[in-house]
View 1 (tube, protein in one colour):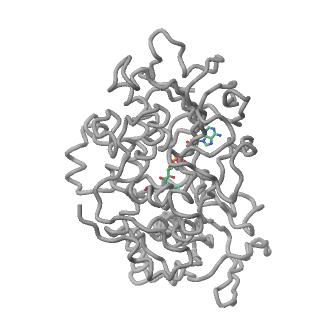
View 2: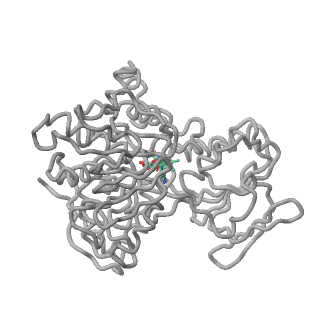
View 3: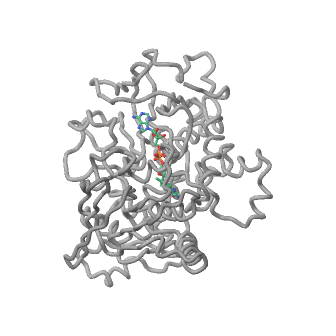
Length: 469
Ligand SMILES: Cc1cc2nc3c(=O)[nH]c(=O)nc-3n(C[C@H](O)[C@H](O)[C@H](O)COP(=O)(O)OP(=O)(O)OC[C@H]3O[C@@H](n4cnc5c(N)ncnc54)[C@H](O)[C@@H]3O)c2cc1C
């Protein structure tokens, strides 16, 4: 367990970051990824700027817990040269609190990198740099406690009890920020983890791909990053088969009007839509969040050109478009993969390794499973505008979820773009007043109307009209 020296408790009161003492906390945060790190930073910010006695000045008695020994960010996929997909100013705090000491610019200035980063001309920094920034913040933001695994949350009729590897915390509210669980196709489960594994595990153990035949499943950003790595690494496989059910290797659409799906106005609008409409839109807007960065597609294309045209290799990577992986079987030491096309035709390919870049599950976070009975039943998780779950317990006690409500807030929910806005919304709810401005911002599009879910897609266009303010 590590806490930073700056993680100071309130003077004269018990330390909320000590192992549980039976003291009642206002909130326990479960998981310290970017989501809850942002919330912890904003709660600290509310206290810092208000001062004792003022609204918010006495703080929220909080502790945030993570099972990892220190902050790491998707370490299993931290391949060399991977880049962020959002601007660096969409950091933990800046969009809602640009004077926060935990901002990305503050990190740059303290590390004397400010001018040099600007000279690079980058608006999207390497993922390693975003991780370094979060590690820097995690050493400064108070009330964080690493090395603590949260097993379950219960409701004892009066308070939430948070069962951990070091005892039980009691709190009025809980906030999960436990991330998403990797999703494997059913046919790819049950194999030895060095032969068939999820993309999130690529770097989880030492691997040597030299001479192997490797299938990569999935045409999104992670699949593309893995393929680029396999084509560039010194232990390059003998052959790569890159299969996707998509019609092509499609780019992330971050053109200006589509990018307005990632401002607060759209999430607020989306939250008010009927369920069927929301589900249809998430599906239709997939390429705004799940496409591949254009720069990465270019890099892969150029790499293939060099390998085939300059080095004379024969198809080092075969791209299988419009095919879904349907079977994996053992075949005399190899893995026989079966693929099905949209027209019903199929093919099989023998490989040695299968890497599934097949995304993540958007489910009820695991530590909340025992609360399921108390949640409002229905087909989807009912998440209110303040990111708390509808439940049968007292109104003043809440279970907030970070990064678990794409179906309620749209494609921006799993993304970093609205991280600070979402945390600010939760911080306001916990504080009981509007400490942070989370209202509408100036934008080019006004979101109006509730078109039917089965509407002709072309008919959707008037839903967003160019506005003049
Ligand atoms: C490889 C990758 C790259 C991405 N890059 C971008 C990008 O460039 N731009 C963008 O907008 N989005 C990106 N995303 C999407 C999203 O921004 C990230 O997934 C982000 O990390 C989500 O933050 P989080 O805090 O919700 O979850 P996570 O970062 O997953 O953090 C969850 C934390 O919870 C902890 N935890 C889980 N269960 C428990 C438990 N029971 N007890 C204690 N601790 C627990 C974990 O140890 C972990 O530290 C990326 C996603 C991936 C997978």
